[in-house]
Amino acid sequence: MPGDVVVWRNTRAVLEKYGLQPKKSLGQNFLIDRNIRDKIVDAAAITGDDVVLEIGPGVGTLTEELARRASRVIAVELDGALVQVLRDRLPPDRVLVVEGDVLALDLPSLLGEASPIKVVANLPYYITSPIVFRFLEWKGWEMMVIMVQGEVAERLVARPGTKAYGALSVAVALQARAEILFKVSRQVFYPKPQVDSAVVRLLPRHDLGVDLQGPSLLIRAAFGQRRKTLANALAAAPWNPLSKEETEKFLLGAGIDPSRRGESLTPEEFLSLWMEFQRVGKIQDVAGRNGDEGEGM
Ligand code: SAM
Image (cartoon, rainbow, N blue to C red; front, side, top):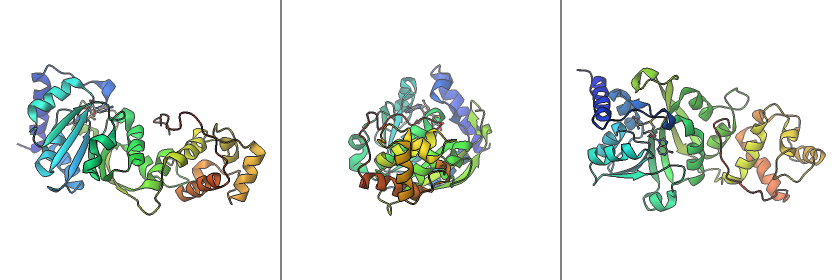
């Protein structure tokens, strides 16, 4: 019997046993193909020395295999009904199941001692961007292997001037080297989503030593109004005290043509522009600096 059928039966059987239906609102599309599961775990090159954080373990399909290979797995699941399933099914000496929202977790307290850790996940697609931003800012990881929707995978690795290039691409490029490893058909999920997926690996980039919180203000302002020139988009940003004319002058002084659009700037240009803003002290402290990074970013 092919392996994928075994996982499929298992997932359905587990849900049925607990009287559960997949919750669309929580992005519950469960992986039901054993080969894909193994390819994801292989991509993270897990050894007995690794501590792995799994985001959204679901019924534990990936978790089981991660637990077989890692020294310890910390699995964070928002759905309390699934937490019960996971605690019943997985060995407690190897897997710590944490009930909670990954976006609200105190990452340093939970994982600080074990870091750098590896992150492996079939992510809940409705909050992919905020999760990626959160981990880029935290930095306590040495590798992330994440399954995301195909279009988001393109954004994670996009280069300037392309349609997919946006705030997420710049943030990723400043903190990591990202690579699409393989595409995944929608057929291998239950229930079947509307879109295909891809598995992406991120490795941290230590050479730039960037603290993303500052530059992300600039990046968000530049891409918040994609159609606008950089001068117009930045002049409208709440943290920028300069008028439009002053912003134009400032950009010229920094060697950036003010009529360019944000989508044409390289990650390195964003970084040096941010450093220039800081150097001349032209940044206002604004409330909500770490506000929500929506999917549209
Ligand atoms: N890992 C499982 C698999 O591959 O079959 C399930 C993946 S499913 C795409 C996403 C999982 O993330 C679901 O189990 C869902 O309940 C969980 N989830 C959704 N929002 C979450 C959040 N904010 N924090 C933690 N887990 C979340």
